[in-house]
Image (cartoon, rainbow, N blue to C red; front, top):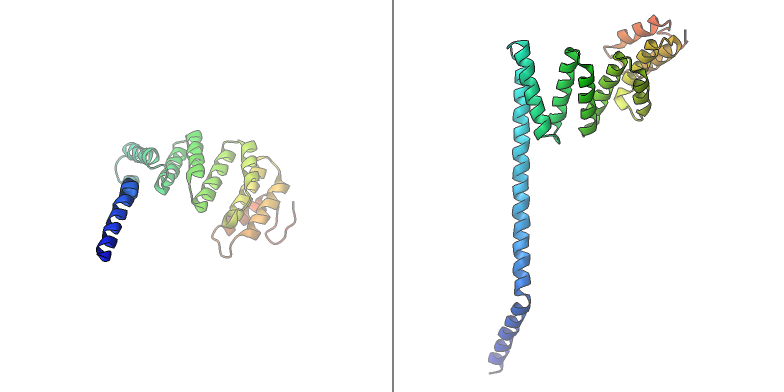
Length: 223
């Protein structure tokens, strides 16, 4: 009888606990399932978006390498690149598409459009390598447009150039040449040569630039 009473008490206690906490438990379980299913749905969406971006980028590269007419090729590349930028702006493919558009714009003589695409790439990429490469191209473009003040400002913003240090030094030399300051140009080219990795193929070009402004490849003397 004592055992029977104890079991009855346990059942009643369980019923009482369920009455007080059952709804909260069910809500918690349902919320947990909803979060789990939502996370899986989000993962599926992300994977689908990544695959779509990859496919569009592959189509863009195929269009760029096709043998169709130049006008048709350019229009197709632009359409696919703009699709990537519009629909997949957070992906590296969109940044690469912007760089492609910038190159096309330069080839077409549309330098302000190229500048806008390079700036977009700088602001949206997560890759430091791509960011620095885009900066190099943008500053070179500014010098070509004789926008020397902004080019100097951009160069002044560079803090940790890493492997791109010699390219920014070369750009400082190019800017100095454009402004007619041969002494500053020689110093910048000399620095670029000092920063150049051993065996780099553009050593001859940098040496020629240095000598053209009166500097010597064998010394740090300014003209």
